[in-house]
Image 1 (cartoon, rainbow, N blue to C red):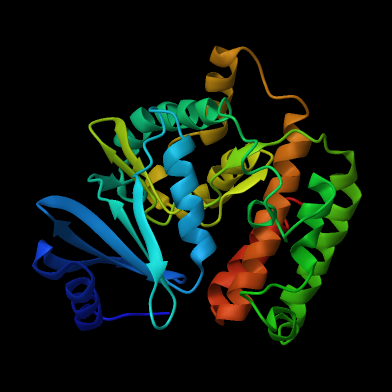
Image 2 (cartoon, rainbow, N blue to C red; image 1 turned 180 degrees about the horizontal axis):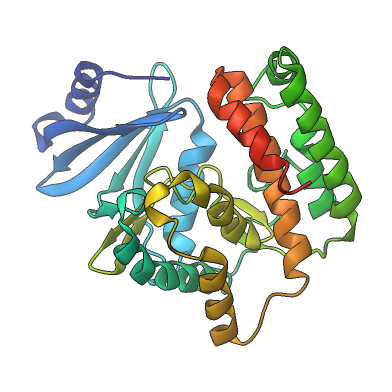
Length: 302
């Protein structure tokens, strides 16, 4: 669902009257569109989207996250004539994606420490929610990972579109076979993972985190998924190639007391899932070049 600037202005004026000022676009993704504004002099953001569960997850994380994981508070969620909206406090900062290598070296340990600290929160309120599980409610983590082959509410017909590309379809099926072989060996260790740390969702300033936003993809699953996410997408950022990300991760884990149990198996299964998931996603979105690049990268993990 997309709402243009004029539609956003009309909605905010109808909802808040003259209290809402300085309305301007701040970004748009595949699932929501965002506008910044001031409300009673306070900087805020309103997002419009078709999936209220994404906004609800933002609201939960705003209440759960410790101070080292700065998640802006969601102050209001409601319905529009076409979908849903959420109002949250605005955070400022540069985007992680746009950092040069020197800045990235400084922020990486801070980010990894923050994600580790996130695992100390009480997850009882989310552990049973289907919206926090890969592919909905599943009995085990391995079954959730393997749900990547099934139907998706947001990606209808993805497999049919993928099958139009025999080479990529064959690689996809090989990746599924590898995941089917490896996933049943995984432990049932669970925590919170954001699952979309790039795509302008981490805001930074002066070597610190100012905001981690857009928790719509977040899961109650293996927290190493976020480390795999960084490892998977690292080659897509030329400015960071002089940084050995795996070495940085190892150094942080050693400082924290040791490597995660079954680290290699867990990371590999997460990497396989990320590759498979994005082949399906790009096939659905008809982003052919990205689909092909993901397929080539998936071969590294099979």
